[in-house]
Length: 533
Image 1 (cartoon, rainbow, N blue to C red):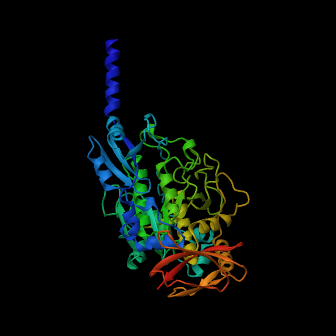
Image 2 (image 1 turned 90 degrees about the horizontal axis):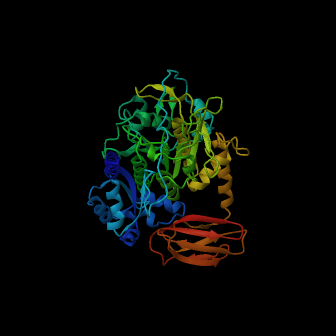
Image 3 (image 1 turned 135 degrees about the horizontal axis):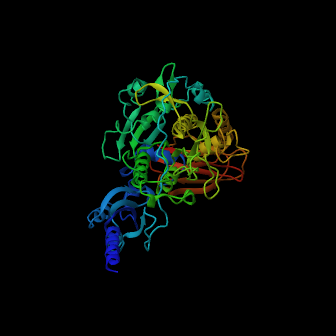
C-alpha cells in the first residue's frame, strides 16, 4: 500500500498546486451612485448619445468594477488578476485551486467563483464552464484576385453605396488576433489618409501597439475598410474603426473570453456602433475546459453573456458562426450562440452553403446562424498586403458587419433591434430557415425599404419644435389622447401626463440638455430624443 499512498499524495499535491483559470464575481459596486450621477466619468458623450437615441437608461452594468475589490484580490496569496469586467462585475484570475477557493472564504464581497476546469466543483460556483472552437480560418491565398463586387452585390449592398450610405459617421470595432500591415499596406492607405482609424489596444500584451499579432484581423478589416481601386472596395469604406486584440496566438485559453469582454466594454465606452468578431470558442488546449454542445445556449459561456450585454448597451454584435460544419464539433460556437448576436454563416459565389460553415440550431433550439454572406473566395488583403481571396466565416462576418453599419447610417433613428430584425426579415430563407444557413442571404435594399416604411408611419406621431426653449406641441392626428413621458439621460421620469393633438407642454422647468420623450397612444408608441435649450 505504501507505493500507492505515495502516488496518491503526489496526485493530490499536483492537483492542489496546478494553476487554474477562474472567474471571481463580486457582490456590488460601492460607488455606483456617484458614477451614475456623473456618467461622463465612465462613458464618452458618443456612448451616452447612442443610449439616449435608443431609449436605453444607464444601470449598474455601466459602472466600473470597484478597484478596491480588484486590489484585494490581486493582493491575495498566489493570485494573479488577468482581466476584469464591469458588465459581469467579475475578474479573471489565475492561481492554484486552493488559493482561488480561499477568495470566497476570505473576502466578503466575493459572491461566487466559476472555474474554467469542469472537473473542479465548488460550493457557490456558477455552473458555467468554458470551451473554444477553432480560432479562425487561416487566410488561404490562391492568387485569384477577382473583384469584390460579388460579395457586395450578393447582399444588394451596392444599392446602399449608390445612395451614399458607405458607413460615414458610423464607428465599427474589430476584435481579433492582430492587425500587422494596416499601418503600411497600400490597401489601407485611404483608411489612414482619412484618419478613419480612431485607435485600438492589444489586451493580450497590455500594449497600445495594435499593429502586431496575427494578420487575420487585418484581412478581416480589409473586407470592410480596404480600398484598392478596381480590385477591392470594403463594405463600409467610409466608417471609422477601433482595432482591438483579444486573441492570444500562442495558446487556446479561457482568458481570451475575458479579454474579449474587456475589449467590448472598451468599445461600449467609446461609443462604438457595430462590433465584429471573427472568433469562436468551444475547445481549449486543456480539454478540461472544453465546452459541450449543451453549453451553446447563449447563457452559459462568459463571452456569450458579455455579447448579450453589449447588445443591451445599444451596439450590434456581428460574429462568425464558425468553420466546424464538416468537423466533429459541427455546431456554432460562442458567442455566435447568444440570442442578440447577429451570427453569420458562409456561402460561395453561387449562394450555396460552404461545407465548413457551422450548423445550428443552438442547444435551446433557436435559429442560428442568423444570416449569411460570401465566405468562399472572399476578396481581401492578405498577409503580404496583396488583394487575394480567402475562405471562412471569418470573412463572411465582416462583409456583413460593414453592410450593417451602412444600413444603420441610412436609418440613424432605428434601434439596434430594429436594424437586426429588418436584416433577418429580408433573408432569402426567412419563411423556411435551415440549420446551416438560418434565414439565408439578406437583401439590404429590402431591409432599407422596410425601415423607410416604418419611419414614414411613425411620422404621424411626434412633437415640435426640437430643440425646444419653452413649449412643445404634441402631434397625434389619429389619436384622442397621448401618454407623454419625458426622461433624463439617467432614465428618471421628469414629466408624465396625458395630452391631446396639438396641445402644448411648457418645459421651461427643465435644465438644458438631452432628454427622451416617450409618446404612447392606443395604436402607436414612439420614442424620440429631445434637446432642451
